[in-house]
Image 1: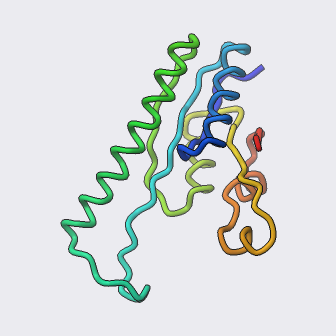
Image 2 (image 1 turned 45 degrees about the vertical axis):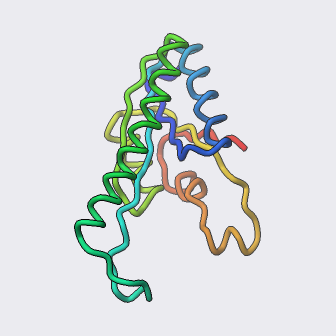
Length: 147
């Protein structure tokens, strides 16, 4: 069946459901799990209408985001250990979340991607986009989507 499953998480309650499902599937199939959290880079453009932020503050904020992401994937790793599943904790830095998910799945030779979809419709989907839809459209690896 599956040998390596990438589980993408953003820390939300819906994402926790995807994590649990991915870990359960890994336990059933004897697969290992790659737990992934994608961290955006701090926006540095002066054209966005915001106040310019000192580079020291930018580095501090990005470090806080990275630390929080590492803590999140470490929790998934601990949860996997409790269920007898080997989990590799991975934090990726990218502004393109879907591309980072697909890239990590390729890099770690995963044969399944498990992620959640918030199920936004209409104008919210247009404005916020859908990372899950992008992964579904562009991944050559099977994707299991939970709602």
